[in-house]
Length: 81
Image 1 (cartoon, rainbow, N blue to C red):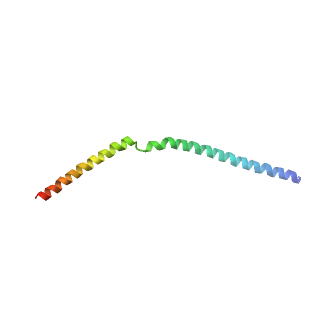
Image 2 (tube, rainbow, N blue to C red):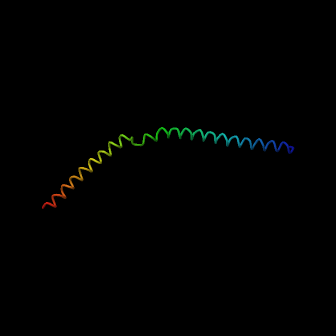
C-alpha cells in the first residue's frame, strides 16, 4: 500500500464523516424550521384578544366602583352619627 493510497483512504473517510455530519445538521435545521412554524401558529392562541381584555377589565372597574361606593356610603354613615 503506497502513501498515495493511504492519503486517498483518509480523504474518503474524512469526507464520509463530514458528509454524515452535514446531513444530520441539515435534517436538524429542517426539523427546527418545522417546530418554529408550528409555534408561530400556536403562540397567538394563548394570548387574550384586545376586545376580550377591554370587556373583562371594564367589569373589574365596575365592581371596584361598586365597592368604592359602598365603602364611601359606610364612611358617611359613621361620620353622621
